[in-house]
Image (tube, rainbow over all chains, first blue to last red):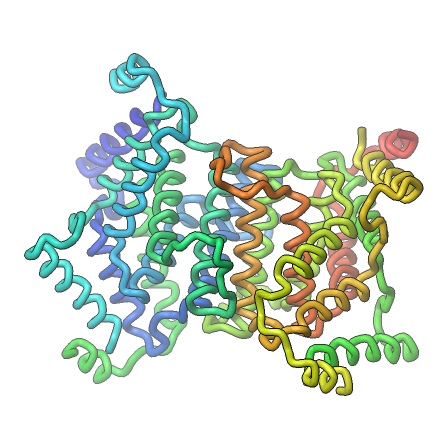
Length: 143
Length: 143
Length: 143
Length: 143
């Protein structure tokens, strides 16, 4: 199954789940809502946003936790029984929180940063990988 | 100036920029659009998504590049003149791309991961920091 | 106090400690002994050394733990009371273990890797920073 | 071939190389010599050692470079032709430099940190992995 299909299923799944109300929050966030929610959480506290170097250390800590989960599930390192039972989804969520906190603290717009990165990949790296033949693309889309 | 104010300015700036059409893409993305755009980019190529351990290595590489920028601007390490002239915004954009690629490859919904992380912080860590007095919150909101 | 002096004290402290036998192991290791001890530990187990990508994930995990300690002691992030009471020394020890494991698994000689890196810094980066005036160097050496 | 054998070859290779003098520096360093050489390099410069958070950022940058090399050689990410032609050995050497700089700046003894870490693994984690049967150990030692 191609990733297109996976993503399509994910979206269909979302709609179905909405129907049965089985998910806690099937809301689709936009980046302004995400940046706002993080800001509201952090603005409650006197400490406010970390300084950039402290934020970076936090980032490094979180990617370390992601590494532990990934190595546990897909690599060769079993977890000790005393270790937390987090999931890769949890760790990606934490990383999103840190990314958005970092962006907020430096007044960076997530949508703009995303668009700039994507535009760069779509132009600069368009020949870095092996393009599928047209027929393969069509087949993927039919799946 | 509080972060609330920064964020407010950012949003106002956005609106003004929309008015004068000075920005390349003032669009606000939602997470489905972001996951789709990444998937469309990656699905062109035969290689497709990296395996989880290779994706993690890519993640580590990108946070290393963020670290270099942050250390250059806010820390003590000057760049060599031969080094790229990227910005922290560029590096955060690259990290978003990797985060979303990772999520796509594992069929994780970004909005859901974000919401779960935020709900955890809003409940579990609600007393981890020093809460502002009510009057401070009000002052912030007036700014 | 200059770092020269710190290091001198460290070495004196070592000698004194040897005298009173107060330390568990005042031994000075060389790199062959370190690579051997790691190899003896790992060779007991059927799993043996991790593959390079899994080793890298382990590395990322360990630097994340170092980041947590550093942010706790020198940054802005307090530890949760439930978190381990490790020290920066512990985390640097763990990182040495991973570095040496990585080197062993790829048949890399630590002394040679160290010497090559130092030779590069001593030549390539000799003018990257501000050299002390000669008199300052002499003062440092008198301390 | 077991890792024992690899390590043995590495040591034999060292001796042979010494004989033909083909290596720039076949010296085996001990940790005091390593900490000294790093200190002598850094003490030439007015800037001296980085602060802990800046050192950590440097560490993160270096592990990012290691990640790029590992992903290039063992993972799925080809290098751009414009990228440096470093090796994993070079990157491990850089990481040793940063580890030792960090230790020096905090007055930490590398031999002691290593010994504490190893003692912990040798006791705490002695049953974390699958022990080889005695006969396997003997076979390894014969190789």
